[in-house]
Image (cartoon, rainbow, N blue to C red):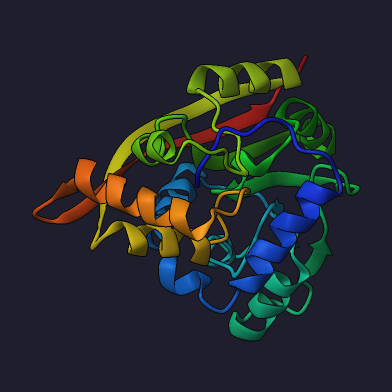
Length: 259
């Protein structure tokens, strides 16, 4: 998930994100092991009694949706920027008949009133996180909550340095995310962070994994550049276990402030 990138113009950026996820919708689940692990940890942060009216941002193929459904909310609204992701979820995950689906960019579409807004490994895609969190705060009902996981700036630091190109995501520091939340009117209840080191057989497989989860760089490399990148990364970051990448993971659980 290479980043950080400068703010990209709409609707070009949005369309490229949609195309990237739509292209790999059938292979996403197979390559999203980290996202599944993040979903488990994020779900554990949401206490009982579980909010009964919830909105999931960036539901994708349902990796985190399964955890939300297991808590039996009375109403669940599932959003994703890519309509094909929502269709895949409908066809592969049993959801209650009263479930609602909301296709579109969560930064721009109307947000319904709910008790909990949640999103797993998705908030790094926001182009204007401060404004978006303020919109979420307005949509969350009194004594409601916000729960999300995202990636920190140390994520894929070695890969981004070697590749020397910009990715589609914004990897903000934990301090900045906490400032976003406070300024939007949220009170932070729980924050957790962890670092993962993940190994791949070689750099080519690493790049393929990023592509399969829709997180490939915005700039398409020429064949010569790609070969050079693979050689450089294989040389600098290989071990007996394969080439490695580091991931910085953040988990936030906040309540709507009373002020």
